[in-house]
Image 1 (spheres, helix red, strand yellow):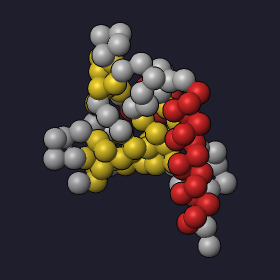
Image 2: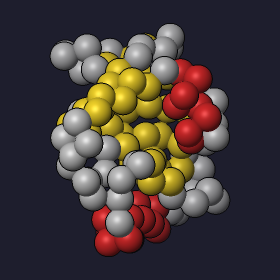
Image 3: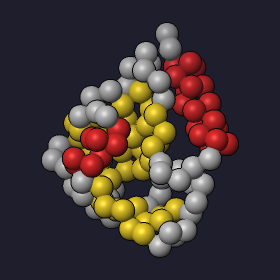
Image 4: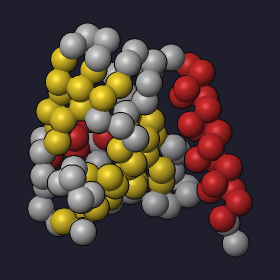
Length: 109
């Protein structure tokens, strides 16, 4: 179901034993973009979040150090891929950037 009003959600960090709650204001500040809509799963949690310039995929609601929780793909290929996570190293970042770059390149006309 597509929801145009924001629904708060949380991602639990197993490494630090911290639950981080994402509000609309916090998410917009983190991604430096304006919220548009989200797709809600049957569990009531968002799976996709659309902003004016990106589509973000919520990969998991619990994570360990080094795991990505939220990945963004540009809605307009002129923008760079954004990977949002407070705990990641270069290898996952490079892997996800390559995946989304390949998707964008393969879908251009």
